[in-house]
Image 1 (tube, rainbow, N blue to C red):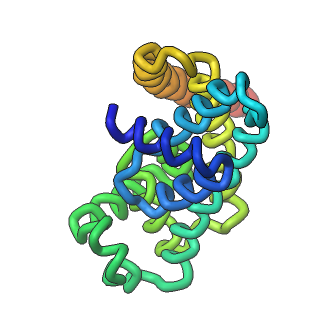
Image 2 (spheres, helix red, strand yellow):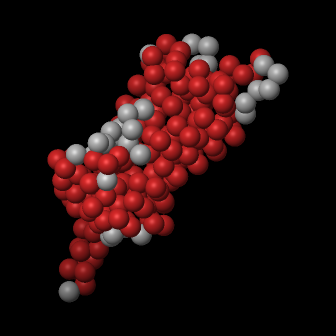
Image 3 (cartoon, rainbow, N blue to C red):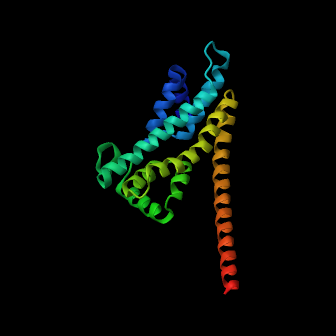
Length: 214
């Protein structure tokens, strides 16, 4: 994959700083796949083990997590402080069209805060969702950081470590990257359904207890 090779060349030269910078740019919605960026960060850690100055994979995870969250907070804050006019800003309107913005408004209104968690696993929609959440001004910053941070704690270490483990087999990295995306989304859907069913059972049980008391 050409984009992966370009990132590897850049990251090999500039290390942690390059990964941090690219992940912040990813948060602005530019067409650089975040998952490929994270995997590339892990790969250079694996490849550097035989060099004089090896990169620490755990430091890379921390750097990557910081870059991801800063990029997300910037988009959220732009929406929060600039308001609906943010979509008319030159560099934003090239990324988020009026149609996409309207669609994200509908999704945010429909799913509420939960969509902030799942946005992490929706490439291409993450930036518009975070921007729209900020514009709505219904989500406090601490809640945004909580939802986005929890999702990032799942995805960021996974993809960085995936690249680290298979640093010398890029084809296998790409294979497991696609597999891991599918597995994460599947687990999240199953978990969400389980929570929903559990909540309804609890509600039904409480309702039966109230009716029995009457």
